[in-house]
Amino acid sequence: MKKEMIIFLIVLGVIIVGVVVFFLFDLMSGVYPGGILRCTEDSDCACGAHINTGECFIGLKELVNIDSVKQCPDFCSGIEGNLVVRCENNRCIISE
Image (tube, rainbow, N blue to C red; front, side, top):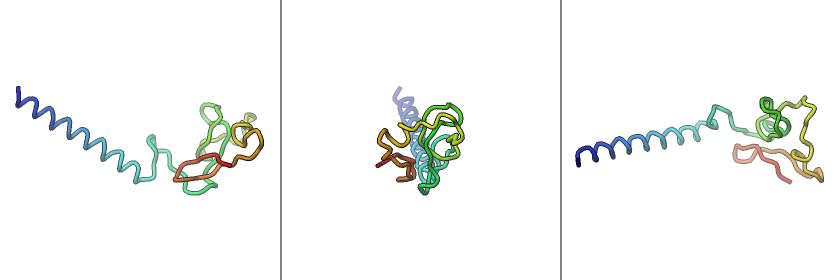
């Protein structure tokens, strides 16, 4: 019984180390899970309808349907029009 427990703990440890290494590599590679590249400058980002879902979305401009009728004005620029989309820490965000 003790031998099986030791083997189980070793296998579990290897799995945990593998998952941690995978996520560290993923973070250092500049790629979000799913292979989507991170932004590096404000011009990489956009706000509008997502190309697949049509939902209001903030992210890489390649994923935003800028020609869409639904441009999400309150979501993207705020009710007062004071919000802007920018890249911060490799993520697209909206801020004042």
